[in-house]
Image (cartoon, rainbow, N blue to C red; front, top):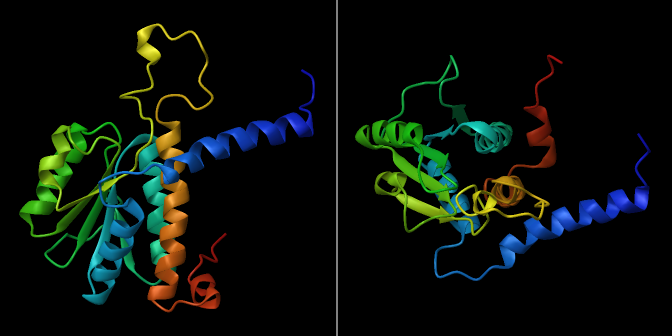
Length: 202
């Protein structure tokens, strides 16, 4: 197998990054996901609540990465189904993602969170449809392609640069980095504070 040309690799990387960054230049009447996330998490911090995250697959991986950084910022952050996950309550926030609009597991977890008085923040690319919307206290709209609209099942011949939910998932990662940056300022967490909470059992 021939080695990749650095110029070709850089061009491919640029195309992928440009496709993901275009998500953030899309105008929408919905509340900006970045503002929603920052406000909701800052509110949890102010009331000494906890943040819980949940989803499966690649969306779940992005949320786990967010949970780690929230811990580094000094928040009590937990991934649902971890063995040390505490009970959720009225002062807490569940953040879940339903890119295509709904998943049965998200519906169930969100229903439990809501019945225990917690706020439920749902990230989605389909804010006007989907089974999970009825559980949301607030919706954060990410206007990106998901498996619900990548057209792969319509006889599409052209190979997509970012198939299925990759645009949405990539946008999640980038947005979460922006959230962490803004929260660091709001919560007055210095780089030294954040680094001091990084694991040393490596």
